Length: 421
View 1 (cartoon, rainbow, N blue to C red):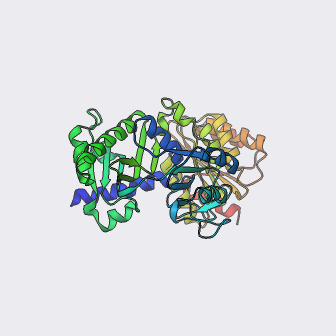
View 2: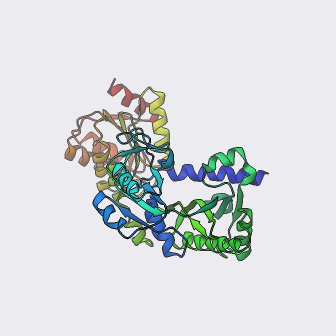
View 3: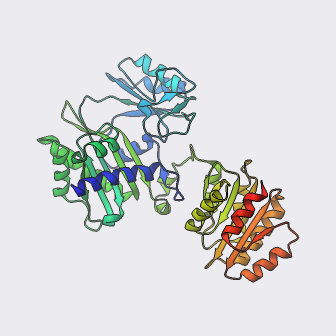
């Protein structure tokens, strides 16, 4: 039972990791892009096309004939079927199923250019720029299958449930006995026995069991080949005409593998991302925008979290998380200043550096050049400690800039909050 509950926890943590805004910027693909990859690796997917305007959809519909159509808004968020268009047709969600070709085409026009709001989007929804139209398949039964990286086992784990097609977190919470977890030896790969056991756990029978096992193997091979951190198929279905399909797919990738997966990472057009996060990534900075007014420039994720916490303790509100890392250059410091001060809500800047492998003089020079180049007009509080700190302090003192200095984190946070009081 403990193992089953652990699997349920893994599902929730895996989903949160995929959707939460963290300092690790993992690539997410739209559903149609994920399906293109699945198809490339021999996984069974429905026929489909993608359009970003109504005329393109009309042209592609001309030779796309089927008994039923599934029209899906393409955004990076779950719960599309239960979503709503805040500026569109009432009652229309992000997934529309119809047997009427003309109605399918009309729904494409109703989705493109409008904002879809789901439980996973920000308030006001996300702009739909593309729509995928897929052929419907005669689903007899829906299951759930995901491959995730699990630190507990130092490798991949397949999570499966015969209760698919619904929110899997609810299944893990309410009926954990329906969650199955199969750790995979990363060196040996997935075995035929494991694939068949998972197919059995998913309640596939007869010839369908072998077909499901084959699909599970192909999905695992895809997972390894593309450096994925998650491959989620929900639903993973059997049809009334004895086929197995990956109907809905979500793939996440390890950002550190981008040098190996150039073609995949080239698919990223930065849709739905904060432009400041995208800009920070170009300079190897970890940035996350927040809704406060005190910008933070810190080295080290732990120190950044502590800095934000202590700003809150003194009654302030952080405007961002920004970790410049341990090998920061003067130019990176300038870029960091440029990015954090591009937020019109910022009323003060707090620099908090504890130099171990970071040279405080490098930070000081970067701060000076940044202030001169962007003509900083808000209060600047600087706390430096560690390697070359005396030289760094002299540089700041002789810069001619109006800088509020602090000797420790508490003093720095207090001064930053008071500077905008």
